[in-house]
Length: 557
Ligand code: FAD
Ligand code: SIN
Image 1 (cartoon, rainbow, N blue to C red):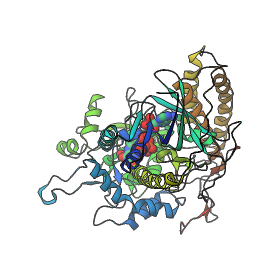
Image 2 (tube, rainbow, N blue to C red):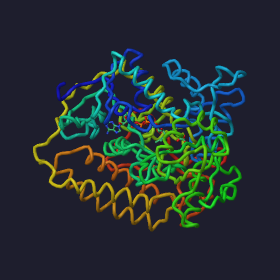
Image 3 (cartoon, rainbow, N blue to C red):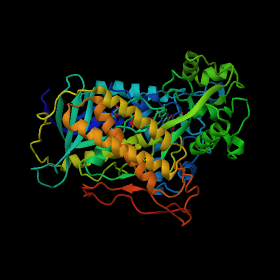
Image 4 (cartoon, rainbow, N blue to C red):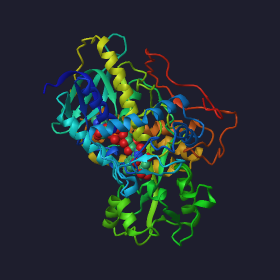
């Protein structure tokens, strides 16, 4: 393949957002290239357990799903966005079924062929369609199969996008537009210049900026950092969702214990057996995640214990093995039998509610650049994401971004610019890899200690100070040495860590996932505000207004 190639649509990332967009476009006859920094399916989507929220049952309604999303979002959801995404849910589930995804069905004779729906915290109905307890695997592998067969999709695995190329680069005249990306081919070590008429960032979240996380290694916030560097605004990064229950075990790097375990009756207790959730919230184990994670954090600190326990062993072994076959096996591998005894759990960073500010077509501030999935901020999640709304958002935004890109492609006349090749003339091979690995560890540790579930202004300032020091070091390293996967990711992790801390410092109240001891209550002016950060090289936007401004708490318009 030549070093420089021009594409119509380049999608960076092949999680549910990226791969479903690729398929949507390919099914319209549009040629797309998909980059993935590891294998095609590796990313958070592959590990999703609980399922996808959609109002599918006769007893449920769009209104109820909308209200539950607004309630979890603690006054910051954009109601129009919530309505749009929730209402598109059932047809997107139908699309997945048409692609061949097999969702779990009831096994009893009276409801044969009906899909089984899971219950999760914050949902007032059973509404989470799933494939046993490994929904992500079922969805990703089915869509992967389709993508690999499509003549319209070119897949470039082991390619990590480094930066967005835009027309503000020296020597190139406005109009400002995204023109492609630089991507490091991890096998050859060469940086390719990949031109495209439209670039879509579908790179997932940034939870790897924390020491303990449920996420795979790919979640390093690359798309958010790239969009920010290319002049796009970023919003609400302070809202980091900590999943209440990840397995506590020295060898279990990232084993999430699905919320559906609590949905099916799992109880949380201290190591001495005392249950505590009812004392924190009337919904007990089924309260939204922010409440459950904070309650666990509080009880762990109060009692000086390293973990709490999650117990579903009061259900029959058949029920547990039928509903949680994957978790049952994985826990057994670590020496725990869910059917017999409680399992030790702790909270861990799970989901990035903030991200690149977009509209409901996924358009960012930079014309030609889109962001969808966990890397984007649409206004759906507000201050706290409702469980299983993330995969839903990936699907709906892939659909709407796909339609928008298809519409624009017809009219778009490529500027035909010569793109500058990546310049390596002034760099040498890195001398000390240890600088990168040491800084990775340091960053993730202080983010956990200072920017975790419970924050204070002083801790946030400490984190900010350390980020400043690391930034200098990494800037120097990045300018002088050839880039590697770890260096690219570290640079991005630092950028997203800084955005998280800046947003957290700006929010002088506690709301949803952001809890600070210095301002323990929500502000009571009647308005809730998103934290929108604008980069120095802000490019503005040519396609119409994006969401900003305060949201009135109460009617949540
Ligand atoms: P991802 O699936 O993370 O995919 C990102 C893609 O981008 C990957 O292909 C990655 O390789 C690629 N990439 C990243 N950076 C670059 C780069 N620089 N260059 C090239 N490629 C790059 N949500 C739900 O709604 N329901 C659930 O049941 C659920 N369970 C979950 C369980 C776990 C363990 C985890 C971690 C998350 C869960 N979530 C769930 C959240 C949900 O899975 C994610 O929010 C969602 O999958 C994100 O999809 P995505 O396509 O945006 O990103
Ligand atoms: C889970 O199964 O608990 C994860 C669901 C989600 O993150 O939405």
